[in-house]
Amino acid sequence: MKILIENGIIVSNNKAGDIFTGDVLVSGNKIQRLSQKSLKKTNPLDQYDHVIDATDRFVIPGFVQAHTHLCQTLFRGEADDLSLIDWLKEKIWPFEAAHTAESMRASAIYGTLEMQMNGTTTILDMGSVRHTQSLLEAVAETGIRYWGGKCLMDRKGTPLSESTKDALKETRELSEEWENKSELINYALCPRFVVSCTEGLLKGVQELQSELGLMVHTHASENKDEVALVRKITKMDNVSYLDKLKLLNPRTAIVHAIHLTAKEVLRLAKTKTPIVHCPSSNMKLGSGLAPITKYLEKGITVSLGGDGAPCNNSMDPFKEMHLAAILQKPVFGPTALDAKTAFQIATLGGAKTLGVEDKIGSLEVGKLADIVVVDRSHPSVYTVTDAYSALVYSCTGRDVNDVITNGQIIIRHRVHQKLERERVYAQAMAEKKKLLRKV
Image (cartoon, rainbow, N blue to C red; front, side, top):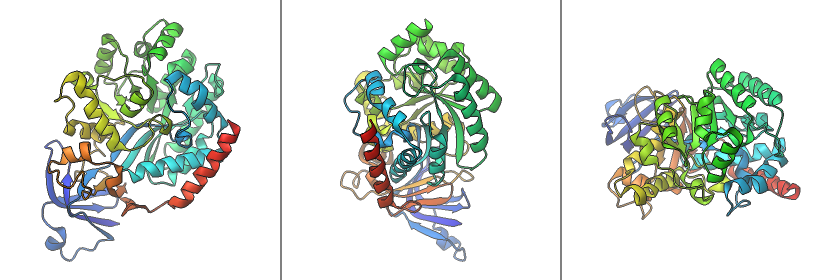
């Protein structure tokens, strides 16, 4: 398969920050050439399977959403205006417990379609406790690049709790089945958070990480009440407790990280543990403002995530970039987290969090072909001449025209090439109605 993207405004995101008008040639699943000259004119005998005219459009690396919950997509609009612990206890955990294999599949496909339509090519996902097999099978049909797995919760007192032994056993089995099943599916260990995980489970996760080399994906220090609960349970601060259990390392993604002590920030920096920032979710749940500017100054890798649909309620990476940039400014000044930095953490930051910055996150020869073409015709974008300003402060998911993941065209002219949108919508609505009757 050869795909030529021609005459686009290429925002390469490489170390030099090159932005130029030109062509991108995709061969197989990789970027073969980047050229400021027309490849059709310089290589008139070459044949292409697809030609995408990107005239007056941005050509950018695909977005990496480094924290999401596909299992929650069907709950959108059913858990508004609550704080974290109430949101979980009153709405999210009962909904997740009500899932069937069919509703999990519908939720996963619907959520993935939405993110792909908005320019996301890679996600780090946290499934639910049950029906992970259905979730992974659904995701495999969509063509998205995926990290994620079964959510782990063994502390008693929730409708999702299971035994430590069962949680770790199923996790191992799923990881062994899926880790090498598809080049796009990567298994991750997903203990929900300290409040719902015993020390025995977290130690088991650490042992599995050491043995299998998998990502660990967990929430920490999102909400002050959560931090207080962790102190009550462990007699320690949240991230310090994870440090004690040897879970801080470059292969562990700490999601939210709003309420950290100075000591915890230093430990995250020293251990090279990445943080995933979810600005929409943090604001909607009233959790607080993560001081991302300080984290970046300490050299901590930061990426962006939309979190779950019920606490967002739009899985739009442009929205997360926009909020990430503007929310830092009232605290740290108008120059804090500029547009270029926001764009970088939404792309290359996510790639670094997943340990694959040598493969995705920028448009460079030899890297995997995860590419998004963004239209500039909307009035809010058309006259903006600075690419980063346009992408971060003016564009939204509505402007995404084409999406390529791993060299495969997923979205063409805003139409999903692998999924029938109306069928996905109908299945999602039918399964949501069933869930609402149960919960």
